[in-house]
Amino acid sequence: MHELGICDALLKMVRSIAKDEGLEEIKGISVEVGSLSGVVPAYLADCWTAVAEGTELEKASFTVDVLEGTAACMDCGEEFVANLEDLHCPSCGSDKLKPLTGRDLTLKEILVE
Ligand SMILES: [Zn+2]
Image 1: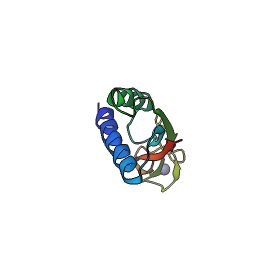
Image 2: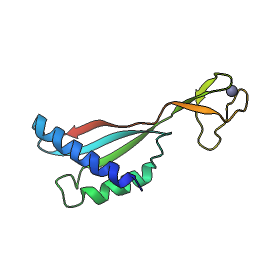
Image 3: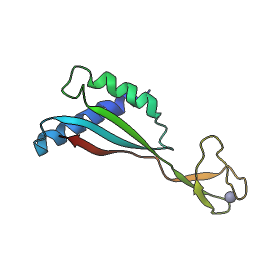
C-alpha cells in the first residue's frame, strides 16, 4: 500500500512549505492525482487522516481531485483519454498503450486563512 508512503511524503512537503513561507494555520490541502498513477483517491484520503493524526495538520481538510490520464496507442498512434476499466485503443482495439499523462500526483494547493 504505497498510499501511506505518499501521504507521509506529502505531510513532510506541506510542513516544509509552511515553514519556508511562514504559513501559520493550514486549513486544508488539495492534491491532484492522475487516473493512471495507480493511487486510489479514497485510500489516499484515509492514509492522510492516519499520518496527519496528532499533528498540527490533523484538522486540515484534504481534497483529492482526479485528473483523467491520456494514453497513446503504440500500434496506430491514436491518443485518447484512458479508461481504466477498458484499456484498449478506441480506434484499432490494440492493448499496446503508452501512458502520456495522468501518472503524477501533485500537491496543488495549500489553503490558509
Ligand atoms: Zn490503435
